[in-house]
Every structure is written in C-alpha cells, then in structure tokens.
Amino acid sequence: MDQVKDSRAVAGVVDALPGYGAYMTEVLIEENFVHIDGTDMNVILTMLDGLNLEAEPTAPRHVSEARSWVIALHWLGSGPITHEVAVALPGVLVEIRDYFVARGKLPPTRIAVYGPDEQLLRSIEAAAA
Image (cartoon, rainbow, N blue to C red; front, side, top):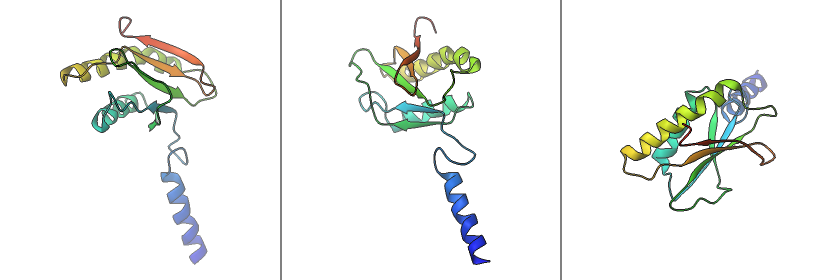
C-alpha cells in the first residue's frame, strides 16, 4: 500500500514539472535582462497563456541592441505554428508594446519565433501589428 501511495506522490510531482504531465511547455521566451524584469516576464507569460500556450522563460540566446530589441520565442512543437497562434501574435505584440510604453519602458520592435532547429519561423513587426 505504501508503494502505491509513493508512486502517486511521484506522479504528482512529475505532473507538476515543466514539460511533463498535463502541462507541456510549447514555447520558451528568452529572458532579456536589459529590457525584461520579472514582472514584465510574468505579464508576457500571461498574455501567451491567453493564447492557450504553455510558456516558460529560458536563458538568452540572441543579443538585442539597446535601442531596438526583440522578444525571442522558441516554438517547441515539431509541427508548424498553429494558424490560431500565428493570427493572434500581432495583437499580442501590440499588447506587449502598450504595456511597456505605459510603464515608460522601451517596447520591443518585433517578436521573432524560432523553431527547434533555431530557424526563424516567423517575424512579427511592430508596424504590421
């Protein structure tokens, strides 16, 4: 009986881990310590959650310039970006830019979405948003 209880406890822990169980990470968001603080990251995560995307922060992989910076997302799916997400990302960029401007911060110029192989899948420009 104790083994059953222990296996359920382990299963509960595994389900709670990022990328396991019911919540599988679909998108990673690169941290940008020059432009994004912890509160900003939580707001971005919440906006992506509104698209029903499970997202998590990840270490920086790309360098942004001080006057022009990009939010880098990494699509972890083996398939293409879903149509629903592709259509919604320009609106998310507008919301993110509005959030940064309202706080007196420099907003990102675009969202770049990279695939698992680091190929650029999509670039959403602020002007197109």
